Amino acid sequence: MLRDITLGQYYPANSILHKLDPRVKLAGTVIFIIALFAGRTPFVYLMATAFLISVIKLSKVPFKFIVRGLKTIVILLIITSMFNVFMTDGQVVFKIWKLKATKEGLILAFYMSIRLIYFIMGSSLMTFTTTPNNLTDGLEKALGFLKIIKVPVHEIAMMMSIALRFIPILVEETDKIMKAQMARGADFENGNLVKRVKSMVPLLVPLLISAVRRANDLANAMEARCYIGGKGRTKMKPLKYHSRDYIAYLILIIYLVAVYAGKNLI
Image 1 (cartoon, one colour):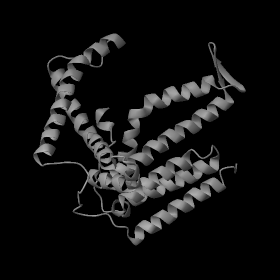
Image 2: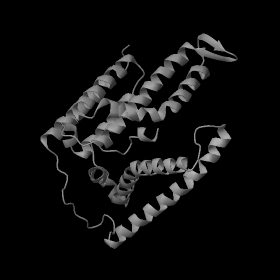
Image 3: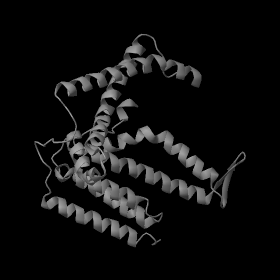
Image 4: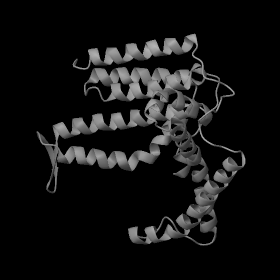
């Protein structure tokens, strides 16, 4: 399960999506999410499906690698679907004890599941095709207008980038600690819920210590290099828009307009 966490991982490839400016990919992710929640009609999901398939093809990221990240939200999908099916009023389809599944609930659960799956896949593509450094630069550039009201944009972008970078590191560290504890006789799979929770203590304590140690080492390294934040800093590779970036913006605008124009179509 730990190896199925793909958030924050970068997949190197020579694709047009990898070459796009990170600001374009950030805008594309936001537009895709907005369009996904714009309506609840087959047309909206048909457009989202076609758009997502096209982007995955252009990214050259293996589809199996993208789908692998969905395994971590299976429980969330099941819980969300159950609530929608049994807590929505409407025409009763079947009953389980005192719980009533409705037609409207089944439709709502289907649409919400599709939204959540597409949301995870679309968001993951941004990190798959963008290095942490480029993501930081893109966030800082995209939110640069907030500097007018004294918002520490560089620091916020840096924290988000570090958080994303630490996810795969901590996942790998957790896997190592779990294997070491299992070699010493720890059991993380058998027993009731209370026993399983107690068995996680030997895992969480060394993981917390390791995370704090890594954070302290990073802080010392940044301090040793005289890091003082974004003020007066320059970029070795400044972000510049190219023709492909403007074409991508145009495609995103057309997609958003098409979704909003046809969101009431059945």
